[in-house]
Image (cartoon, rainbow, N blue to C red; front, side, top):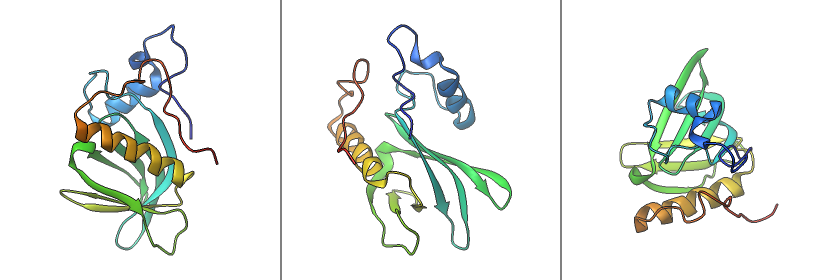
Amino acid sequence: ERLVSRVSSRFVRSATPENQKLREKFSLPDDGRNLILHEYACAMSASDASGRGKLYVTQNNLCFIGTLFGKESRAVFPLADVVSVEPSESPAPNSIAIVSITSEEKFTFLYKRDHALFVIHQLLKVTRSNHLLPALENEPLSAPQE
């Protein structure tokens, strides 16, 4: 996991190559709220296979990009549509289930699962309270130490 959104206060974070690529790959607007807060290596499980890739966490979305059956696959889960994010009882280790109003997906082999759950739950609280992240410009989100 790498914190990309806060590298230095001396440049415009939305202009970093990582954030520009994320917006291009997922067709996200450049509104200042689609900055990569965290990224986690993982696999997204389909009914009969799983694709390795990365889960990107932004203030508005959870974005997955990976390879499934030799093809690039992408998924965007707007946080406003997410109903729950919970640890998953799966044969694969470090799994979570994300339930949205339109689908349910399982992410397995999630690097630093507890940290990912903490960050996503905090963002869901912010989304549901209709506030901006108070520390987005100056401080990274703090999480339990592993």
